[in-house]
Every structure is written in structure tokens, then in C-alpha cells.
Length: 187
Image 1: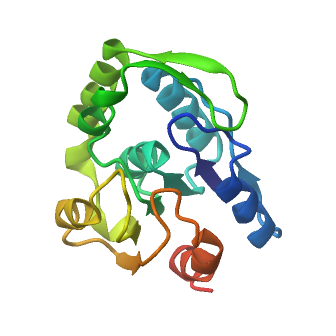
Image 2: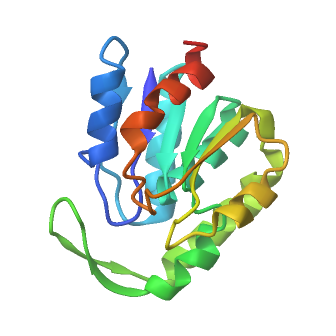
């Protein structure tokens, strides 16, 4: 089983979630729509992971990468982090205000309380991460998150692959699915 975790202002129907489901058609792939509130989103993800008997692999993009790395710390699963917001509490503070979900067009409010919740989650779990369980899938031209900062946060990552010309949305994700398969399943 794979749990695909979408990023900020996205949904379980995001492009990368669909590409993951298509590629891993012989595996169960869950890609839940998560609420905006971080503590609630993380609680849901912990429940899903626990219900999977801790056998699920994780793929998370941006804020979803933040959640995936923390779930990996708790449950010891392998996690693929696609342009992850490693310090989401720092990178998402500048987005306080009203936003529109890219997939659903629903408006939502991002608050200081949500940033504080991210900080609390980071403080509680980051220190328990086993870096060898992590695959960093990074875009060198990510316009939102500096890939070199992510690399330096995980000097002992299990695998790191950097791509050119795919931005924060990681437009070359489909090309990376074979590498993801190899990391998760030795494929």
C-alpha cells in the first residue's frame, strides 16, 4: 500500500496522485483529501497509517512531504519526499491569509494557529527521523523551496535524486516513478 499525501492548497485528486495511482495500478494507493488544519490532517494520516498495520509506504509532495517525513519518524516506513517543505512552519508563515484550493477552487483561510501547529509537529517528531528511510526527490529550479537546504537537512538520506526544469510542481514526476518504485520496492 502507498499513501500519497498532497501539498498545500491541493487535494487527493492532484496530478501527482493520479500519476502515482496509474503507475502503481497493482498496489492500493490512498490519496486522501486532507483538511487545511495541520493537527487534524496529521491525525487523519496517523489513523490511516496505523490502520494499514504500518505497512504503507509514503509519498508526499511539499507540505505532504512534511507530513510524510514525520509519519516515517513515527512508524518507520519508507517515505518519498517530493520537494518537501522540511520546515513547513517557516516556509508557510508567509501564506497567512485567504487562498483557493488549486483542485477544488474552494476558498480557505491559512492562519497563524496553523503555522504554530506545524511548528509543534516538527518539534515533536523531526528528531526521530531515520534518514535512511527517506528518498529526496528534488527540483533544482524549485521556485518555493531551496533544494540545497533540503539536502543539507538530510545528509544521510537513503536516496537523493535531483531534476532540472520541473519547478515546485515537479512537472517531471512521471519520469521519476521508476526511481520511486526502485526505492520503495526494489523494482
